[in-house]
Structure formats: C-alpha cells, structure tokens
Length: 393
Picture 1 (cartoon, rainbow, N blue to C red):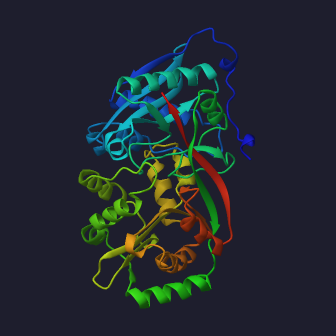
Picture 2 (picture 1 turned 90 degrees about the vertical axis):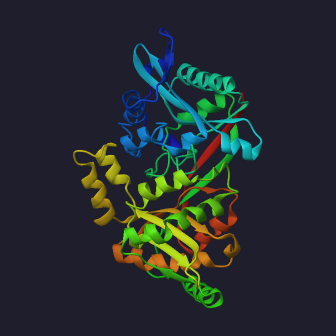
Picture 3 (picture 1 turned 45 degrees about the vertical axis):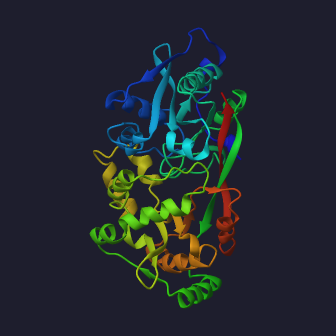
C-alpha cells in the first residue's frame, strides 16, 4: 500500500561530504518553533500530511506550559547538514510510567528526518546517548509525554489522509528504524467506517435492554460551562480508569486534568459528545467525537492566524462529511455489557443530521478484540497501521 506516497528523495542520501551536526534545542519558544516548523516543512509536497497547530506543539514541549513536565524529563534535538535542518527528535522520560512498570524506558517522539541514513543514525545516537546518561536502558516510540499526545509510526496506509490525532510519516521512516536496530513492540490499527443512515437494529435492541436493565440514559449539553462544572472532572477520571491498563498509559494528574478541561472542552462540538449516566447521574460512559479538522489544518498550514481559525471553525460548524471518533471510555463494571451500543444509538442520528458520511476510528491496539469487533456491524475497512518500536540501548 504505502509505496505510492510522495516524498522528497534527498540528494544527501548519496553523499556525506559534510558531516551531520546534532544540536540540543533549548526549552524556549523561538528555537522550539523552528523544531516544530521543520516537521511541517518536510511534508510541504505531501497530499496526505495533516499539520499540527504550531503554537500547540510548542506549548507541549515547554516545561512552564505542559503539566507533564512535573514528572517527565525531556530534551529536543535537531540535526543540521551544511547549516540546513535535516532532522529532529525529542526524548522523553516518563518517570511515573517507569515507576509503574519497573522499567528504565526513554520515549522518542516528534521525530522527522530526510531520507538519509547518516542523518537518522546521528539523530538516534544523540537521543540514545541522552537517555543512557539519564540512566535509561531501553528506547521506545514514537510516543509522547502522555496518551493525549501523538503516538505510533505509520507502517501501512501512507496514501491515506492523516487526522489531527495521529502521526503521518513517509514510508522510509520504518526502514531507517529497522536499520538502526529497532523492532516492533506493539501495533495499532485504524478503521474508516461508513456512517449508516440509521442505527443498526442490533444496536437499537441492545441499547434498549441496557437502558432498561441498568437504568442508564444519555444526556446532552448546550452549555460548555455546565459540561465543565458537572462532568469535566469525572470525564477525565473515567479516562484515567478506563485506559489505566493500556500500553504505556500515563495517569493524568490533577494539574493535567485542569489543563485538558480548559484545552479540549472549549473546542468540542457539544452534540458530538455522548455522555451516559446512571440513575444517580454518575458518569458511566463517554464517547468523544469531533468533525474532521484534517482539511482545515492543511489549509491553515499549522497557523491559527490570519485565517487558520476561520478554516477550523468552518470544519467544526460548517459542511463536513467526516467525523473523527476520538475516544470511547466505559466504567470498569460496565465493560462488555453493551454500553457502547448506547453511545452509537445516541450519536448516529446526530451524524446523519450533520451530513457525516464517514467516521475515522482512533488508534486501537491490534489485540483489543472488544473494540475491533464493534465495527463488524458497519461497512468498514482497516486503512492504517502504526507501530511502537523498541530497542535496548
């Protein structure tokens, strides 16, 4: 599948007249902006790449902005050849995850490089050296500070449009990692799902049974203020509980929860949010989806100003045929009891009202059968696969 994706073949691949110079990047806005920009400029010719918002990426990498730095150490590096940027990488040590797992893992992320073996070797050598100096013995990635950051290198589906929640990379990336001694740790898969014109009969039936049996109901919000006050905290508490045992999960601290309530709940389209509660109004399950921002982010080239905000608002509230399924979380005692059917029963009519024809699933671990099997009731295709790599250092 992926070999058709366009990417720049660099002439530097064939010569090494000038050696590669790798530089540690200070945690300051100006150099970090160059770091982020490199990861966007490298894809200027790609029809599939969806850029992040520059200010958002910079903020993620700044200790005084990102609460994850309370328990993470990190360092960004850039590679230069002949004075020109040719690669970037960030190394992150998540001390909480390491304490929970008993491992000494460093994570690499925010990684991009031209198709040059010398460049990728120099970048990863710098990252591995830094990790070893900080007492680490393994490197895994691509991963971010927490699960709220992008993770997983694309290994299949290079000719599919990316999403705001995922990494896009050229087909040569995994080849470089294999050459450098990195091996598969886990894979995630993603699906493109057709939105049915009505709720499938099976989901209707299950959702009626579940409502009746457990006294559950879905609630809708028209006020962000009310959503934040009533369910902002429980929403992230539920994510912490539901995702706790997943690969590399880093529990969100109170400061992070406060940060994400402010950051994410302000941009959600409220009718695309499904909140399921019990008779006492306690949160039981949650489905978060958002109109696809891929086309808008491509038009904005990662900038909010002067017109990026306009494209984003049009994607959220204007005509759009694609919705991104960001996450589903279900309380432990309700797992595998049909609660997912309530979420679909709630959201499918909303999707039809807005003209959404296609849904993009988020990352699902390839062995997570309970999530994977829910797509059997919809026309769907697995269109992307991504990987976390591991290496002893």
